Image (cartoon, rainbow over all chains, first blue to last red; front, top):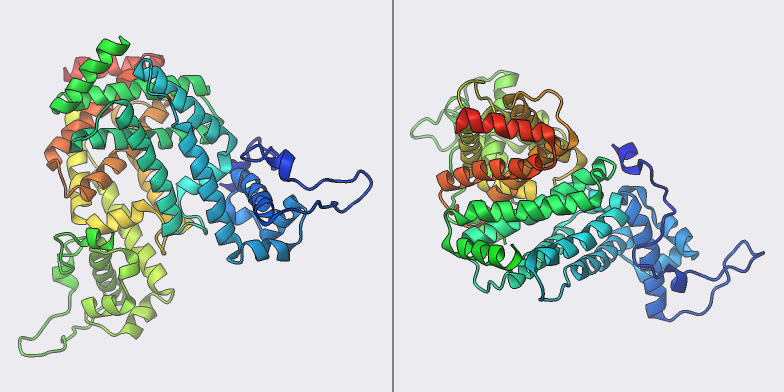
Length: 244
Length: 244
């Protein structure tokens, strides 16, 4: 199972947020220990978080130690504890919050133009996030992880709720009935499940096909709901006339 | 949140497997403590498991203590520990294994007659299970529970795998390609998600409508996949000619 997680990936792939170039310690060519520049508290915290994010992205939390984080950041273990006195759990939750924020940005999409291409663009960003956080994404959503708590579950649920709100706002729905709400929420879970399977299947089929399939699924399940829900039926008609 | 879990349910509802009548201690009318009949080791284990199942069905694991289990079974706390020396975690996992087995029985459906009614009957049984294990089902699948481990995740995944195998065997598919496999697995996750939302929405819409909606979703997502997968396309044609 753990072997699966690692299929074809090295641990040294770039960090989650592309900020590594700024916050990693400056190495002097001949030195074996990094030469630090003085960092502010915020900079130091961001540096440690970046190192943690990069490790948690491609390994299960149980396979990341605070020593690994200290080493990746080029600092001492006590320093990591000084910033995150709650240890790995606190560091993981901080990293997760940061990743959740990044994920929310995937949903930022202007309210203009045909609806389905908007959905496709958001899915493209989402799948790029999944692609670049493979093992961390799997460990987080698969459950049973040692660092999973009601708090981490709440962070993930917050992202799901944000996704549902974005979709409904793009559909111009302010007061969704239970059938439409369930349709959207279930489709979001389907996207998650498909992403996990996609990672498990060596990222096949290609992301573009997966994205198109998910968009088409969205239309298909809306159509199913439309047969017994007038609100969804009106939406499907609007979608067909605007995008068709 | 915890309040939500309890909406309209008492803790004293009947046990998971309908065996309570056999294994509960015999009460003599006037006595305040139960009069035991001598139980074999297997009977005693089953009795304790039944009591635990009944409690775990309608409460989150963190809200069930070993004292509760002992009280529900009418035995002493040390006796519970003698049978389950690993304490609540061991008891929970045993209860979960037993519930998983029950869930697998929901998928037992003769390989005869039109396909979609077979799926509908299996879903009816599944939704009855969900209905009668509401809080336990939610706590199990929502994640972040104190008793959740990689072992409990594996038990739940085993049920999902069994469901996928049943569906593919009913479809007479022995060698499913990745697109068909993903479609079936994602639909199974959609069923789970819909069940959780259904519990959260006070079991609305009625179970029959939810079941029909899920069957129609199954057909709809197969149709989406059929557009780019010949194996699924052949299946959809066979479904339409047999059931239409």
